Image 1 (cartoon, rainbow, N blue to C red):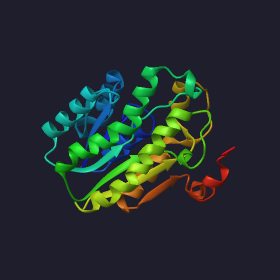
Image 2: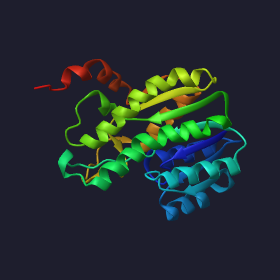
Image 3: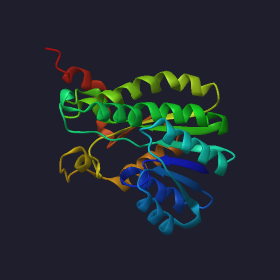
Image 4: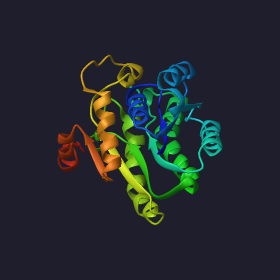
Length: 234
C-alpha cells in the first residue's frame, strides 16, 4: 500500500509509520515540520519511509506536501490526516497567530489534502481523519483545539457521502488520552494515557476492516451517546 501519514515525527503518527513499514510491500510518506526526527525515522525504517518537511498550518506547506506526494506516488491507498495541536489556554488568551495556525493545521489541512490528493485515490482507498473523543463534550481547557476538531468532525460526516461516490472509504478516529507529546506541547505535563502504539494499531485495524468510526479506547464510544448531555448550556 502507498500510505501518507501527517504528523509523522511523533506520537500516533510516528507509530503508524513504524507499523505500516513492518508490513511487506507498504510505502509511507511521513509529513511533519521536524526534519531531524523525520531523518531519524528514515534511518530506522529504511526505504519504506520517505518524508516531506512541511508546515501544515500554512497554504505553502499544504501545497508542498501535495506536490511531493504526486512526485513519489502514482496512486494513494491510505491517507491518515493525523497532524494537529492544541493549547491549554482560555479562548481570549490565544494570540491571533495561534488561532489561525491551529485552525489551519487541525481543520483546513485535512480537508485540502483530501481534496487535492483525491485524484490519486481509487476504489477502496481509505482516508482516516484523526479527530478526538473530546468533540462530544465541552473542552473548556482546550477550547480552540476542541472547536477546530468539532468543525472537522462536522465536515467529515458530510464528506463521507461525497467520497463514497468515488469508492473511497472514510474512517473517523476518536482518541482519548494518549501518551504523546501533545499535552506537554499544549502546556501541561500529563503522563497518563494509552500507549501511542496501541492507538496506532487500533487505527490500522479500523482501516483494514473499513470501519466508519474508531474510538480509542473502545469504551469511549459512550461519549458519543452521553457527551451531549454533559455539555453545560447555562
